[in-house]
Image (cartoon, rainbow, N blue to C red; front, side):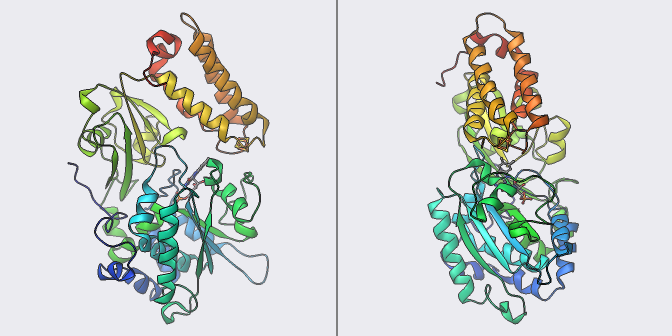
Amino acid sequence: MIEQHRIALRNVGRIDPASIQDYMDRGGYDALKKALQTPSDQVVHDITQSGLRGRGGAGFSTGLKKKYTSQASCVLLECMRYIVCNADEGEPGTFKDRIIMEGDPHLLVEGMVIAAYAVGAERGYIYIRGEYHQSITMIRSALVQARRHGFLGNNILGSGFSLDIEVKLGAGSYLCGEELTLLESLEGRRGYPRVKPPFPAESGLFGKPTLINNVETLSHIPAIVINGARWYRQLGTETSPGTKIFTISGEVNHPGYAEVEMGIPLRELIDRGAGGMKDGKRFKAALLGGAAGTFVPESLLDVCMDFDALKEKDAVLGSGAVIVMSTDQSILTMLDSILRFFEHESCGKCVPCRVGTRQLVDLLKRLKGAEGKRPDHVDALVYQSELMANTSLCPLGQSPVLAIKSAVRYFRDELETPQISQSRWR
Ligand SMILES: Cc1cc2nc3c(=O)[nH]c(=O)nc-3n(C[C@H](O)[C@H](O)[C@H](O)COP(=O)(O)O)c2cc1C
Ligand code: SF4
């Protein structure tokens, strides 16, 4: 068994998630009480000092985001700020936010109220993936209880700070997890991305400064407020402090999740976190970060799982999804399903991605059907994905290049020679 260090999951499985009393009995809402007695800019400072980075995929500094949002000037006299929690969780292989929302919904609510106080937001939204029925129920019930106990609503705990939070539902679009598209959707429009800049901290929901964070990111905030930035920095690595929930699936004995310190070697995560390779099969590759992620081969099994160590290897941590493949499985088939996923999820707003995702799928089809070595098709795949990355409007069109280039880098032979790639996965 792997040694877990639980911050975001510390109450999961230990409390009745439907009971605010259970949460409070384990110190719940103490961080909010402490934060409300601290100047808001000090709370921002502490979060920045902790080094917490966004757990939604990009790994941006959470403290800096809060600083930019709180400092953003408003054009209108009456300055409204928003806080939005991204609970859309659409990345394939990722199910960490769901575990928090179902197992400890008050932790998210508390983290969100503290973050809102830090940036001066008066209104909040939790945008939850529509298929997550249990998460929706648990969060809605937690909000009602929090309001009853004075942790939400007008003049929270007599501090003079007011905030209300509403749940909004996503309707199954992967792209609506992208922050600017999510804001469009929240405003009631079709899920098309906006051009960046401006960034949400400057002009977000309804054109107002908006802090948008992932569920897991916000769930770290109460522990940081209680224990301090220095405590948090002692966990994980120098540039990626703290813990991370990894969701491990595929050809392992015990698929599931584990919250561990950042920097854990991939090998340990698979062997001790997921019981090793299924039925003694041989490891071939892991797809890190889901569809918008990268393949890593056996030679990288000892890589440290943090934002920068992976970046040095041209890999990504992303959402923390680890999809493990054995030598029984085909990279070509996996790549095919990734590219078909992007083709399906492309919103069609810009030509490079609308046409490009289709072309990538066609190229892969040709590769699969080709006889003998077809290096020209592999090169075309790389060329097309690079072209898309350079010309697409939003990050979705810039994503396929990651999986393609890592597959070509480590498994070129297999892609060029389809017969090596015969798969049991059809
Ligand atoms: C296509 C696409 C889909 C995304 N889906 C999600 C998602 O489901 N959940 C999430 O938290 N972030 C998602 N992101 C990342 C968000 O745009 C954004 O970076 C995140 O909400 C910021 O929160 P954080 O700083 O706490 O990580 C997605 C990004 C892209 C490009
Ligand atoms: S890159 Fe793709 S998803 Fe993004 S705007 Fe263009 S068509 Fe839509």
